Length: 360
Ligand code: NAD
Image (tube, rainbow, N blue to C red; front, side, top):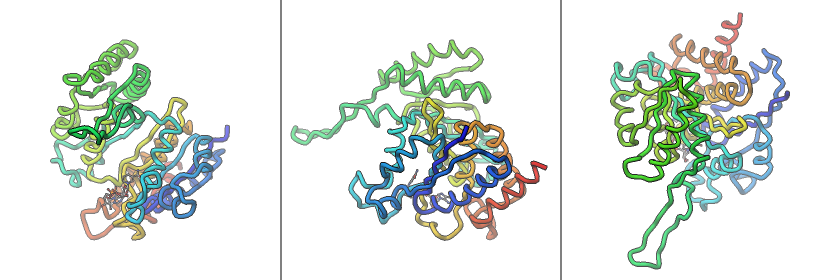
């Protein structure tokens, strides 16, 4: 069956890294004779400049009908002063909400050759390979009621942290299933010592663990996890958490590996439709210089093959090509320890050479 892909390069280096990803995608389409229908549209600031909004109805409609959306990055100082609804980041929120992308998968891994780029000592960080599963469409970021009350003394602001049983079950299912395909360890993270919503979360996850006897389940308080991620990150395999704690923990985990230019992410709904994007932003400080690292974007394509395009094998081939690329000593500027580095546009051709060699 024809698979539909929507490519949204976005702004800044989003455009540069997506162009590298496209080279790998079109190489594999050609090599494998894949039946893919591909569309490309503007999003974020570049969409605002042309159409007056960061996400047009037409683009949203194509996104809804796509199996995988490959998203570069949005944002930049020229759009920072726009009103809230017109800001580039609203495109991301709009896509997540309209497509019901409730499960955010954020792998954090280290290529041991790059251990010196990590802020942690080598012996702590070596062999890092964690998957953080963050709930993305609920919790305190979306809970009602919320607001700022100005006509009382003292004035106050408030939000509601709420999770219902179905929301917890569907994200826990994603995490348990991910753990089954990895080292079969799942750590559920919340603040059950102070929050009722967390106590409830813990009880549901514990109940669900009976359906997954092969997975070793543990529970941890979020503040402890933040500390443990820095002290002993290799104790984790899969971590599952709500929106707020997952936001912070996934950023800590991403930082551990040393370069934000290496890490992909996936946001999925229950029909395996997904949006795939690098963890980094549009990096206006280096945009247009041709020095952005496109690996996170290319690794996002690998995740798309795995979770939405029904070709786990091709996802694995891309991941393995990236490992070989690093072990051969290729380095973009952000991960280079010398004055020598590869330009963005040289990365995809080198990866394609590896893909070709490995296929022979
Ligand atoms: P950023 O991730 O864009 O950049 C942080 C630092 O990392 C910068 O020094 C940048 O040069 C470097 N960097 C990032 N990606 C890199 C890559 N692939 N290769 C080499 N170096 C890389 O974060 P920021 O500076 O806080 O934000 C810049 C803009 O991006 C803002 O407008 C922000 O709102 C937006 N943003 C967008 C997303 C998204 O689209 N998902 C995510 C985060 C930030």
